[in-house]
Image 1 (spheres, rainbow over the protein chains, first blue to last red):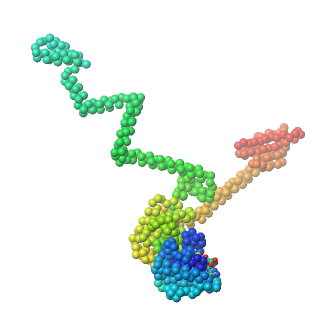
Image 2: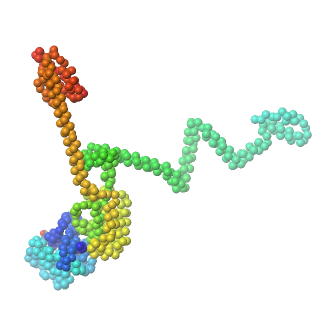
Image 3: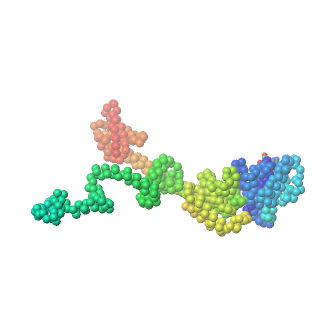
Amino acid sequence: MITKKICIIGDFAVGKTSLINRFVDNHFSEEYLTTVGVKLDTKELVTSTGTDIKLVIWDIAGADELTTAKRSYIDGASGYILVYDISRPKTLVSATNLQGSVVEEIGSVPFVLVGNKNDLEAKAPEPDADLIDKSCHQLKTSALTGDGVADVFQALAEAVVAG
Amino acid sequence: MKNPDPKTSAALITDSKQQNDSDLETLQKLLVGIDREQAQDVFARVQQLDRRSDDIYEVLVDAVSKLNPDEQSKVMEHLSSVAATSLKTSIRNDPDNVTEIVYPIMLPAIRQAVADSMRSALERIDNMFKSKLSPQSIKWRIEAQRSGVSYAEVLLRNTMHYGVEQAFLIDKKSGLLMQHVSALSGSQKDEDAVSAMFLAIERFVKDSFSEDDDALQRVTIGERLVYLAHGPHALLACVVKGTPPADFLENVQSTLETIHAAEPDTLKEFSGDRDTLASINPVMSELLELDFDEKEEASDGFSDKATIGMQLAAIAGLLLLSYLWFQGMQGKRVDQYMHELNSNQHIQVYNAEKRGGIWELKGIIDPSGATPAGIAHSAFVNEPKVVLQLTPVRFLNAGTADVADSN
Ligand SMILES: Nc1nc2c(ncn2[C@@H]2O[C@H](COP(=O)(O)OP(=O)(O)O)[C@@H](O)[C@H]2O)c(=O)[nH]1
Ligand SMILES: [Mg+2]
């Protein structure tokens, strides 16, 4: 079993915390999020190559920009989930900016690009080809219905294990 | 004073010149009473400093030894201010010297004072807790009784106790758990998430309050303390229950240094595979052995509670049994008493009832017959109280004979 740190990043209210709550084994109180600015959960997975992996998921309190404090939280991450809300175009812009900040901070690590709230009417355009290229995977999800959620984490786990 | 020699007095009347000198000397001797040699000696004594001090020494020693208590205190009074001043000067000039002198005197005194204050603290705690009756205090009370030490001491021993419940070696970069040891049995919170949380809190404090690399050293979580030692690549977080000694964090810090020295590269480039750091597990396990055995406490917790329960039940059972036995015995004796009374042809007891711990026997008596008091004593030597109400049958107004055995 190996453990890896991953982060979930995206603008305010895109559904980051909802996605994790849909997925993880261990719930910790959401109070952590408001007090320390981060919530931690874990999920054990087996990759297609048969590797046991435990993801330690850092849910960082959302903003369209990483502050210095938040930057320190993404340190040591092996990958991240970049989330935008398909019903709010602005959140895709934030996602693109955030991705740049993360690269500046920790270099290039695999990330999954997630368009959440798939159950709502899509108002955001498709992401730039550039952003899609950088990502290891692009998915649409709904934390409300659970649609595609597990795939996001599985895809990231595969990418992280592949290195 | 020496008496003049009669022979030298006779020689005074000769008149040769040489004789004159010696005459003068003789005259001197006669008048002054001491010879010249002696006088010179006296002069020397006064003039030569070392001889004078020799004399003073002798005189002083002699004088001091002859002082009576009254004189002694007067001398002390005069000397003490001089002594104080000289002591001050001496301390100022060479404090080490004084420390050396005072150390053997002070150390036992300090020890004594500490012991005294500890004892009084124990007494205070003892009194404070005497009135409190929690299951825990009952347990400690039983423990104190069993081991023959004071309750306060048991209390202190239990509350001063500390132990490391868990130790987390945490990757300083990612918060990933590198190694974990625990003295607790049973399931715990996800230690990987806890490890990450410790780092998150540490980062949060550093970002918010201080740039210092080791800004956060201690976190209080409920009744537990988390001590954080900081190394170049890892944090070592110890979850402690109880009150550890002041140098505890230093111990943790040195353990972390040992770990860093043992596996510098693996720590630096931690892959997320804990097996790569299995070699440091024994070093971490040593932390758990610091003055504690929570395992025992955790697993014994239940059985201890069961033991107390059983002990209490046994005590209650015993009390109930002896009460019933006592009641039975009393009843028997009352029966016997009634029987005895009724065997007397002048008495008829028709009712025996217990009220508020007192047996009330009611009956009738022929006053010309036996005294009930005598009978009562024969049957109720050890009974607390029996009241016998006998109504004389010959008379119309009721009279009461109290047979109160105050034994
Ligand atoms: N309709 C819909 N609402 C969602 C979905 N995911 C999250 N939400 C809602 O969006 C709001 C913000 O979600 P939250 O998880 O707190 O966002 P975060 O700030 O990114 O963590 C909440 O009211 C959620 O109920 C989704 O997939 N569909
Ligand atoms: Mg959230």
